[in-house]
Every structure is written in C-alpha cells, then in structure tokens.
Image (cartoon, rainbow, N blue to C red; front, side, top):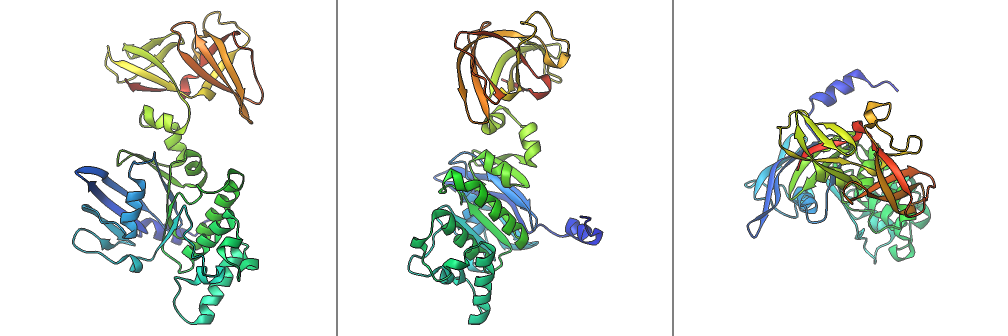
Length: 369
C-alpha cells in the first residue's frame, strides 16, 4: 500500500509524540537513570530492553509522573510536561499504563474496569467499552468479574482499560511476564495489532530480547542506567556496540587474540581488526549459529572460501535437542576451552567424537579486550 506523501512529510516535520531529554534519577548518590534520552513517534513501538535493575522501570515511572527526575525534561507532542520546576500531574498527561500484575479491580465487573478512567455521558462510555471488548474478543465477559477470567483474558481487559481514554502514549512494564509461555506469543501479537490501530506511541519495558525483537520498531538497549545502543532490532542485533550487547541477545563464543598489522591470529585463522593498534588484546565474539561443522575436509588446511577461514578441531562434550535446533558443546584441542555450536533440526553426535569447526568471518565481532 502506497503511503500518502503529504502524511509522510507531516510526520517527518512534526515533533515526536514522546521525547525525553537527559533524564537523571539518583538514589542514595547512585545514578539509577543516567542521562537517558529517547524519542517515540505516534504509532511507533520502542522497547526499553535491559537486565533487571538497569533503570528501565524507573524511567517509565518518571514519564508516567509517579516518580520525579533530578534533572532532565519530558515533552509530549513538543509540549513540555515535566522538568525540575514544572510538572503536569500524572492524570493530565494522557498516558496509559500497563503493568505485569494487570491491577484490575476485583470488585468491579469487566465493563466497569474498562470504563474506570472514562469521562462523559454513560452511553458514550458504554459504547467505548463495547467497542474495545469486541476488539479484544471479550464481549461475552462484559458482565463478569476478573476472578472468572484466565490470565490471558485479564491481560486483554487491562489493555482495553488502558486504551479506553485514547491515551497519546502507552507505557508498558513487562505486561506479558505473568502469562503462560503457550499463550504469550499470541497475546503479544494481538496487543501489538491493537496498539498500532490506536496510533499511540508505545514504550515497552522488558528484559526479554525475544519479546523486544518481536514487538519493537526500535530497541533502546539499557545497562547501568544508560542507553548504550539504540536502533532498529535488526541493526542492534547484527551491529552490537560491545561484547555485552552481543551476549544479551544470545549465547556467545569468545576467542582471545592480539592484533598485529590489523590482523588477529587465532586457531581459526586470521581475523581483520581495522583501526586497532598493534599489540592490543582483543575478544573475537561470535554466536553459536555461526559456527560451521566441517564434515567433508577433516580440517585439512584452509577451506576454499576465505570467509570460513581455517578449521580447528574439538571433541564433543554433550549435545542437546532444543526443539527447533540442536546445541553441541565442544572441548577445543588448541586451548581446552568450550565452544558452542547450533545446527537446525536434530543432530546429536556422541560425546568424545572429534569434529572440525570453522567460523563465519562476516558474523564475528572484534572488540578490545
């Protein structure tokens, strides 16, 4: 479907729906949120991704207005709503909130839960409740109560309640973490579809890389109170800023080496290290899926394609089938280290079997150690 050029141009010149600038929040002298800036446009989903305790939820609470920053500014559609001198109350920020515990009122019916934040005539509120419950496929429970619903159904009621006042911004703090794995993917997809229809700017906090990759238009990777990398999911995954960023998304293998003439020599051959000074110790990081098992050449010298380098030998320590792939762990001959490799489908070689391995050059990351 072709986009309207006028709409595209208007979106490019209009201010972001949500913009935060240089937020800082300290507790007992420690910066829990440390100079965090990001912007989100209407209809965009941004995931604030990072380990527990990195400052994600604190950032969300500051935007919602239930916590106060020590410095920094928050804007909605270009209008200042909060700095250290001026503060719009939380209830006037037109921000919807969803949390992992759903926070439904047990004494209210499903309809009354959804209508809780609505204002206006009774019939108008009822029409909005019916509209949202139909969209989340819960009209049959309109007169029921939260305790009569499953976890997934409660989550959809919480989503309908958060969207009922038509917020310009939706803040979501790990809203799917309490759901059964079997239901989670379907409910995440339904939620994403509904949020896109409402054209809200969405900031989703999660510690699960898979969830961020599945839902986000943009990922802001957070660590130690700071955003260390931000971009489209593909770019964050394939161009990680450092070794920790690679490891956050998947298992990793690491080769230790030293640079000489912009090259790092390893048992798998040489790796390019442009711009790295001679004598620098480096970590060469790569994911298990980018290890190739050499069945044909038995490690007899360099392979025909230079991208595969040189084969190195390892002994199988153990192999496990993970459902859609197999994970094999090798004890490498050259230094006794353990290297992990994944292959599609079922491949379970016996422990003690010797195999030759190569590493894809175009999927490796070289960082100063």
